[in-house]
Image 1: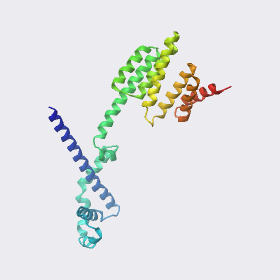
Image 2: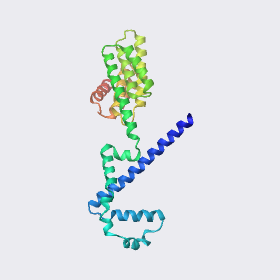
Image 3: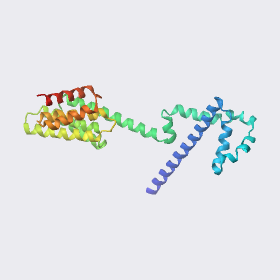
Image 4: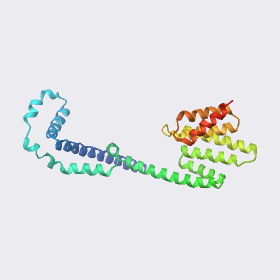
Length: 257
């Protein structure tokens, strides 16, 4: 059974590679045709000649005279008609694939991207539902939902941030001092994990997490640590104006006489 799976995988890879080679060949012809219609009427001729010489490994200078002598004007005048079907395939492929240049290199990329988009969409929908739980203060249920989602989306920065946010909001509504501190420390841990998990491009997530940690640390009286977090948030820049302004205000309060 395992061997069958391996054979199937190899066949799929071979088929994908063949598709990619054929698409690249079609695109090459289509570009030659585009240039031909722009006035480069000998581009097919030289492409054919140079391909043969390149394959032989000889110096082109030794063959240029013979190459020109083989020129057949009548043949070159028919080139567009000869490649019409190939060019049509390439044009259709350009229209069919929004990220055409990526598809040429990796035909399976679109399928992976589509699947990833579906996963992200499902995640955002669940986060919206969890936000509603937080609004009605169902913190325990929200936390359980987020932990379950982490099984499907391990290391997802948005989930880790939401866990930090949930613990922080829960702490705000907690009257027991020890329990409140536990929840705030849990919030800090998740915010730190969110920063570590966020991609370098996700400046908004990193800014919001640093600013949130600054507020929690300031509440706990750990002012030096809080100041570092506010400064880290400010250093990212105003990619989220609310969080950025909160960080500025948090720093001002900690540094004022």
